[in-house]
Image 1 (cartoon, rainbow, N blue to C red):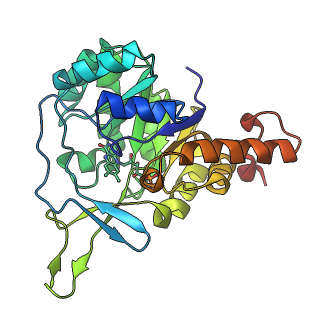
Image 2 (cartoon, protein in one colour):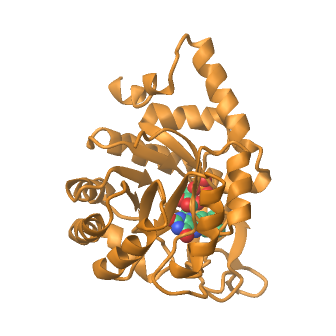
Length: 289
Ligand SMILES: Cc1cc2nc3c(=O)[nH]c(=O)nc-3n(C[C@H](O)[C@H](O)[C@H](O)COP(=O)(O)O)c2cc1C
């Protein structure tokens, strides 16, 4: 699988086939589903979303219909030839591999293994290289499609975690998931989110994502899919220069789904103005200075 292009990030627009199809029609090269587990899950009590410092704080809590509950939506997407990456999670390596086994039968182009949701029980996996290795190995054993491992910047040694995923056979690394954060209501004197702690996304995390991709690019041989705060074509170019072969866009879509088309055309124009013919010519260029 060639890792390139501009994708919808996991979780931003859920798992409804018609909505994911609409994003595909608005120029997304690939759509990534909300993370799916073995069983349906209600998620956290509200409020589950708030804004803070130009970003979004969410504590959705991995609400999803379960892998079997997604089958009908996937059928809609397959019929419309939408390239779908199935995002999955599991509480144990065995559970994740079972979700992967069921998910692969639905025909995604790849499986993205969420090892890093900061406000759910799985938050600790991508803090531990050995655990990460076990999860990726278990999923690889049950699915023959490409496996993308999604990591967190909340881990102090995310490079070691990504290297463990690579050793276990991951085909690419997705960096980054949201950063742990919270917001307190000064009038009620209590945390705003029902779960108290949530994950920060959007523009405030962009420099963190760039740093992670830059660090990873120098240590890994597999491609990196950059995600975190990309909001315009300049951000996309910066993310490519740090080392991202492909880019996912999440929170920026809340300002309008035309953003992916705008980013693509901006990057294209940048390449043209600089006498370059393909984005691969700038991937990781900033690491060679
Ligand atoms: C409301 C919301 C729900 C999310 N749900 C998931 C999820 O289910 N699985 C996952 O791997 N990432 C999830 N994410 C994280 C995004 O995929 C992405 O990694 C993160 O938001 C950073 O990108 P962005 O700043 O472009 O949004 C979610 C993010 C938001 C804002």
